[in-house]
View 1 (tube, rainbow, N blue to C red):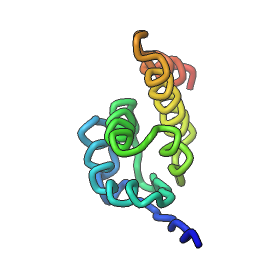
View 2 (cartoon, rainbow, N blue to C red; view 1 turned 180 degrees about the vertical axis):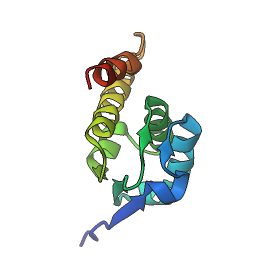
View 3 (cartoon, rainbow, N blue to C red; view 1 turned 135 degrees about the vertical axis):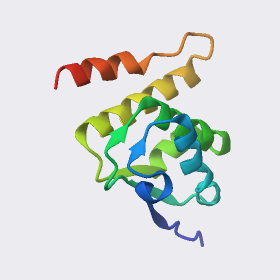
View 4 (cartoon, one colour; view 1 turned 120 degrees about the vertical axis):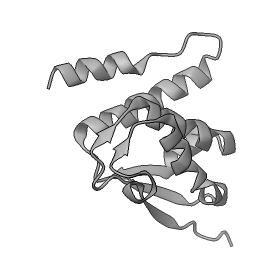
Length: 123
């Protein structure tokens, strides 16, 4: 009988503070979670009390997690909680850009920052 995987809530603010801005922050977050990624468990990233997000943070997070597992598997197992609308857009756009670059390794990767800037300017 296959054992049921667990769900873990990752309190991002406790790992990197209220600003998720650098790729180093993303790597620090994922390095704390490698054992959970390897186990196949569900990860819910709780962004309560996180005020600022950047593409660099999510790129660092996905790069490190992807080194351990297939990005499609990661996508299925990662969910977000208490994230702002803009933070969710950044998360989604970076994930889509990351998947695109993996599927098209010989093409130039999509620049998500321009998409984000257009969203911020429209607020």
